Image (tube, rainbow, N blue to C red; front, side, top):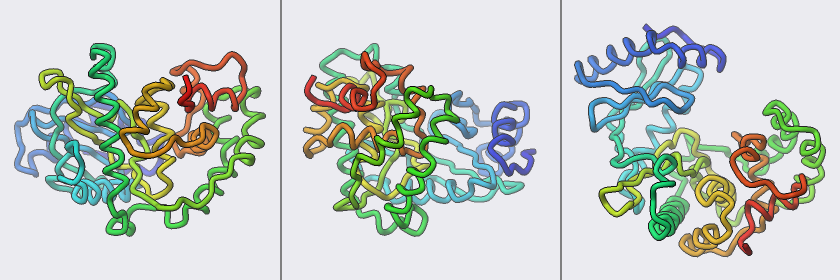
Length: 310
């Protein structure tokens, strides 16, 4: 069965070993009264995730990420029925073996927006952006206090200070070239990130990959998932991700997103600062995925990716 896992490297080795994972998932399903259910592994993601039959999803967490398992279960339970789009319904969550934990949840209908986007008519893409923004606004409107015992950080200013201190090392480890790296310290120092007027429940990875749509229902948004990395903090932190991975540097779509959310646009430099300071930030990947400005300048990048005047 699953071995005890204490590091990210050990986890990566287990995640790649389907011959090890599948028997454990089958054993766990049998314990949950789902013996014989068809298991299909989802290919993406840093954790082992399986569809169980047509209606359920099983997600496995190693012991060193036990807090993430508890957090996702609590958040799923809290969110059920509260957003204008469906979220997975929690069925059960508990300890498995050797420190591993699991969350069993309902499977959302439809398919990944990221995979379907290129097939979706332009008018439906516009409506999807609107529906996504309305969903994020509803998430941010919820009172985060009932989750504050399992969702952090407790001190947003301290969190940002730690991220600022590590930002260059982080992006160098991601493979960012020196012409970009040398600009980061002055840029993040120059962008004021004042204490937010309100702290909200943040998805933190609000992107097409975590939204589902149904081609048989007029390409309606059918769900939002992956609440493992949620935080409580500045709403702008989520707008940075949405601009990168929902509207994807499209100024017209980003204007639509702001309008549907119901707020004025955030300054582009502020969103780029949050994108650089994000826990999972990867600027080299962003530069491969999105159009880069003619000059390798962070100020130009801020306008290209987060501006609304195009």
